Image (tube, rainbow, N blue to C red; front, side, top):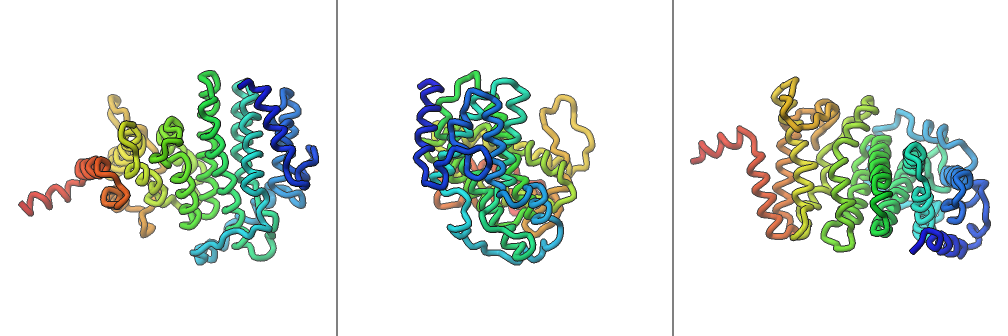
Length: 376
């Protein structure tokens, strides 16, 4: 199907919205129609994205000042005390699931129409940043600040999830000439998810929502509908993007790496036979992570030139274990424990269980090997 036909279908489908959004406007009072987002004219597309940014962030206040006030330092302990997050109220949802799906269809082709590298880079950042500025309809920085932080984070992650749903549904239509720019877009969206989590100090409920989104979408590796090439790319860039965000935001709370690995444990347990998913997760996530931890634990300051290890410098000081310890040996041991639990999970397939246990055994520390010798 040609891009012109797709744009016509897109604009006609979005024009059937409820009365609130039928009005064609680029003022930011309603979401821009798909025909504006997927226009041949760059100026029109730019105006549509700008209007969308205004709509998503609300019109009563600039989004930058709103974010600064809402997520300013202070109140971390009170936020942590909210262990169970209530679902966001329907009346506070800025876009329902149908509206989100139609909107992302427009954003997908908005990015499709961007051809020049600099334009692509700027637009990729601008589109991913929408997840940072969206907020529910009812928020206030003067009262119930903690509840506002929670509802804003839930809204942001819901908006972020729709990107992966839309990308997966359109992935087969991405040709080789546009592949690189969509890989860049994925990198930007993955990175922005870490920023969403970081601004609520890696709250356990936020990470759980984020983890479930990945397991339901691009790391739902047991589903034949999941484009595994997207999965492979995410495993390839995950550690480097986490390292970059931690380096840039070093004054924040360290990242609870064990919780962030949860969706990849799920991927190991549920990878389908006949695919390289299992090995991709091992090669791109766990091997580099163990290599970095072992390097820092041994206090080596230099890596041999022949080594292919990519060093993630922030991991030495910006990771914590489940008990908030920065001890790298403890972190390493807990990762091993998680691997063992992944292998013993009832949902783990027999073939994956064997591979997980073999990998777990290969990564056991010196203390474990000595203990085994003593037992013998």
